[in-house]
Amino acid sequence: MIVVSNTSPLTNLAAINQFDLLRRPVIVFSPLEANTVFILPCATNLTALRFMHTLEIHPSTANGLSVTSVVLLFQRRAIDTKRLIRKTGVLKQDILSHINEMIRQMLTLESGI
Image (cartoon, rainbow, N blue to C red):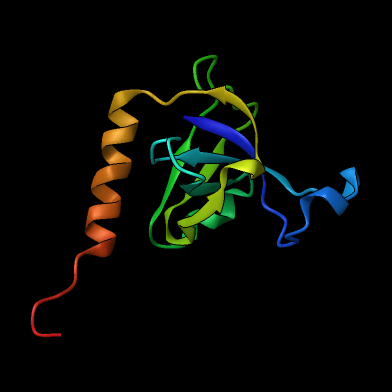
């Protein structure tokens, strides 16, 4: 699922001015059952594609993105669910499968290390 999230490093969300919020689409790839979720941030700067472990996603009515975005798999992290602002859409199953495979490859350790 794609969600707009507050990615501000500030932790006191009650004291954050609305202009201090860093609103960014993120892909939530863990269940929303706990107080924290794993997310993959997205960027609109396509030059981020030069990095390993990135994926380009084009906007669609299903995913709710307004511009072509780059999923930054290498910036995977956990955030508090309080930082999730609103759901914008969902990804097609083939894209989710591709992301899962990329994460698997990224986390695979080479033998002998």
